[in-house]
Image (cartoon, rainbow, N blue to C red; front, side):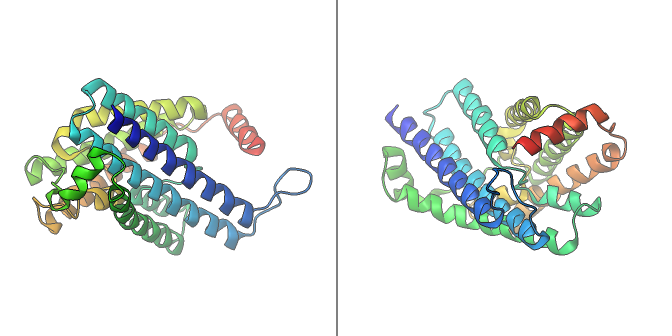
Length: 282
C-alpha cells in the first residue's frame, strides 16, 4: 500500500507542477487587465502559448503514464482499482490540459481541416515528441530517487523494460487502428456536450478501450505517448513499433475523420452560446 501511495503522490506532484507552469506561462504571455479580464493576445504570443501548452501537457501525460504503467505491471493494483486509476487520471488530464491535444493525430486533423497551418502543426508535433522524450528521462530520474520499493526495483532492472506489444505486428496494428478510430468517432459525437459531461464521456471511452486492447498493445493510440513509453523497450524493432503505434492510429483516426468528420451534426446556436459564455468566464 505504501508503494501505491508514493505513486499517487508522484502523479499529484506532476500534475500540480505542470499546472503551475501552465498558469505561469499564461500569465506571462497573456496577462490580465486591472479590471480582471484578459487583454487581447497578439497572434505570435497566442501561438507560443499553444505550443507551450502542448509541451507541458504532453510532459504531464507521459510522465503520469510511465508511473501508472509501472504501478500496473507491479500487480499491486487489482483489475478494478487499476481501471479506476485510469478513469480518474484521464479526467484530471482532460480538466487541466487547457485545450492542448498532446496527440500528433489531433494536430494532423487540425491541419487537414484547415484549422492550422503547416508551421504551427509541425511546431506542435515537434514539442509533443520532445516532451515525450523528456518525460522518459524525468521518470528515470524520479525512480532513481528510490521513493518506494517499486522505484528501487525498477532502477535495479532498467534493462528489463519490456514492450507493451503482446501480440503479432498485424494484430497490434489492427488493435491500435480500431482504438484510434473508436475514440475519434466518439469525439465527433461528444463535441456538442457540455464540457463537464464531455470530460466524463471521453474518460469512460478511453477506459473502455484500455479494457478492450490493453493486454494486446497497451491501448496507446497516441504516437507521442507510444514513443515515450515503449519505443526504447526490448522485444520489437523500431520499425515494428512505428508500424503498430504510428501507422495504426494514423489510419484509424483518418478513417474516422473521412467517415464522420464531414457528417457530424453541427452544434446548435444555443450550445455554441453556452460554450462561448463559459470560455469568457474562464
